[in-house]
Image (cartoon, rainbow, N blue to C red; front, side, top):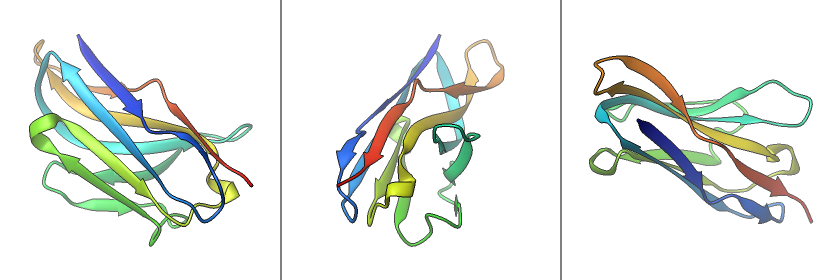
Length: 120
């Protein structure tokens, strides 16, 4: 089995920073792209940032210049550094990994989510 676990959410004031982490573990052969998504109450889940195994990145326009995605391939871990946070960044943040498991299948594995609240 493969597990994807996020951590690092919480309550922060506008203008503040948070760093999210996501680690994939278990029956993993290799990991392709890893990404962060978010879902605010009453809204659809949206892509925040994604990073390939080679380090190429892509960001939603709403977070460009404020958020930075990075990864540690040796640890199958992806990070999201969030700076200059705004109330509209409030959402549940989910990590997704494109993982080749030991059943020799590519599959999208999702974490359980971590809540980020930006409020004064």
